[in-house]
Length: 473
Image (cartoon, rainbow, N blue to C red; front, side, top):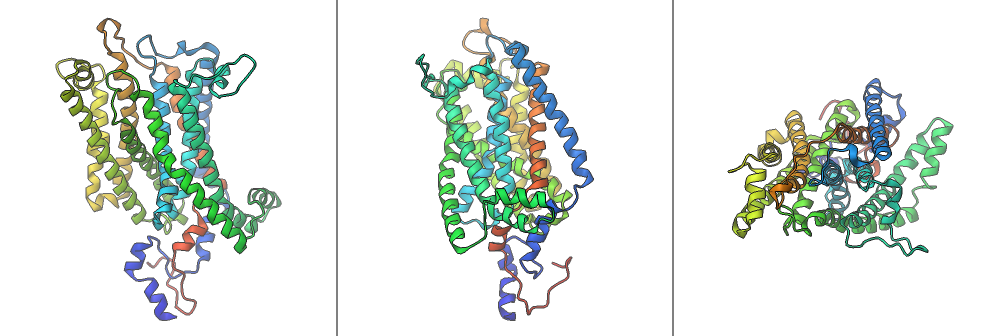
């Protein structure tokens, strides 16, 4: 037995399973994760939640103001019909891609390191899609007519326009959200049953019991659970590739210079994963600092692996940027050349938004190159800094694609400069309030680490082996 325990805790084994076990029984995982939910609400949680909820209310007020007054309160004009609304929509949809990638694709490829981060990433996906869904709804102008987007037959024979990119987004995003909710909730059921069994108050026991769906952990339940989870993972995998590809078709199927390109689908998917992983780290690193219980569960090896994915996808995005420039030059199309080299880069023309293009290039292409250095990938401050740059850069990428292509199009006589109004700015800021408020509620009332999956990949200590002290690694 002692020999077996030594084999399970060799450095090579711990490198394969990036968790600090300290020769403890599996109960330490349950105790640490459940304690976040069971203990009293910490002061910092209220300090974070109250401002976030206030910002969310300001955003909801701006949405109501826009609905009651019309889209004229935005800064859009006759030339720039898509601006911050669609920019923010594509930004939030991209944020949600890392959760499905971590949950589905890494699950199917049996990447065990995903188990400590998949649930938080899945929750982030849902909340990001909620924020994204706001913008197409208010973009149509008359929100009360948005149900026309659904293919519902009626007496008047009103059918949606299947050639409309807005309709493609409705199908893609609604399918993505539905499958993501099912995937997230299915993975929660065993851990909700654990919280139900540990709950001390009747209200908590009752509520967790309802959502645990009568889970008892029998062999029959586990067999059906594993099959359902596998099928949902298989269903979610093509969605990772298809949803943002469909969103890219909003642009690629048009003839607008700067949009009419075939590289958009893979380029958008890589960018979505790039920005999504950056947001996962942006959320998990502060959570790890504020909850010491997570120290042994979200380790430097997790951060290192996610940083490598950011480096890979960031390099793909940089390659796509260069490909766009080369194709604009090689095509000989004067409109494409003007859009990329003049309107965006400011070459031979004072581009209105050239500054945004260079911010995008620095944040998305230059800053992730720090992750070639291992000491940067395992330094939390450096990782957090790069991730913040990536978050900014991915928003500017969508802004550059949409606004620069529309503001200076085919006819110089129709050029119009665009700048956002206070309604657009605070609506976007308000979505961050909604996103963070929902995530703080998730952290407070639900297990943010998948306990049973972590136990599956964590070597359990030999009961005859002398355990190490709590702080000893």
